[in-house]
Image (cartoon, rainbow, N blue to C red; front, side, top):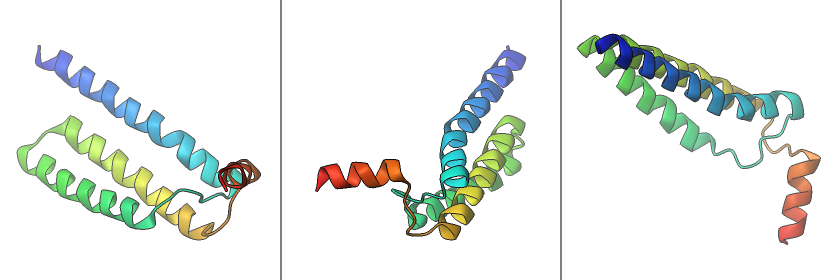
Length: 100
């Protein structure tokens, strides 16, 4: 049973990767930082670091891997968001124009 729960946890980690991948891809390929709050992402990195420390303390390998993946993905997003700060792709620019 414990093995099954670990497998489920690693599947969840895969979902985390799948959730971050489109954001990272859009930032990298389009150079678009529209809708990204650097403060929010920085806070998420900090919270992942705290969770990582906790997972190390309790010795939960799945939780450690998940939080490490979170921290890496969030850090990539932060770096790219800073690199492309105030840049917006045509798709987001047209959405903003429609709202106004």
